[in-house]
Amino acid sequence: MAIQQHSPLKLEPWNDLKGKVVMVTGASAGLGREFCLDLARAGCKIIAAARRTNRLQSLCDEINQLDFSILSSALTSPMGAVESRRAVAVELDVCANGKSIEESVTKAWDYFGFIDTLVNNAGIRGNVKSPLELSEKEWDDTMATNLKGQWLVSKYVCILMNKANRGGSIINISSISGLDRALQRGALAYITSKAALNTLTKVMAMELGEHNIRVNCICPGLFKSEITKDLMEKDWIKNVARRMNPLGTFGTSNPALTTTIRYLVHDSSKYVSEQERNRKKKKKSMPSLMLPLTENIYYYL
Image: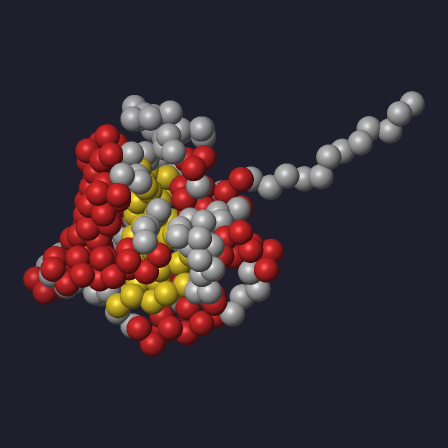
């Protein structure tokens, strides 16, 4: 009886992203920093954008010192020259006016000559206050960072994508708080901004599809990050995780978030747009496009 030969395990195609240029906002710390490092290891060239340029430079130095010898084909620029830099830093304040954001985006684009994917990761949670205690400034700051800034960065990146006739992928980092679950007391502005971001994602996807630009959002649940650092230290957080998640714990960004971002960067996702990606959606909704997964809405908890 012949022994059955098993072929070597083949990894998903989005583990190899050589040649892709990805811009990540809020890249100086937390999830943004992790996304940059993971995408760089997959072969992407990284444009790390944030206000804290000193942190950005240390991130870019770390990426540029990685051993990319196995990714030699990814070291060639569009003009055929050898590109020594794998990551560059761009100062970007998503709360700035449109002109300032446009200048930062143009600078980012010019570094490598194009951008394939924008990861809109910049965001704040704000102070925990009731609707009666929340100040107008706190409301405005949250909306400026989590909503208006996401739109403006997307707008100017998509204008350049359209002019170059390249198409591309926009990935908005939202939250399950913006869906009809995981509502939290004291987070009025944050939850409202994320719900609005989910709607912004759908409308932009609808309008930009004709330009071959995909727009999706990822709605993370409980993940360790800079924005949730204090929250994760609370004794009661484990009880919350047990109630909300069948696995009874909070998540780690790798592989749950990083793998999803890799997929949305890769051309395998070219027919996926206008999706809020979560994990436990129980209600059916009408799909805008065929999504090769079980249901339309996926969140990570």
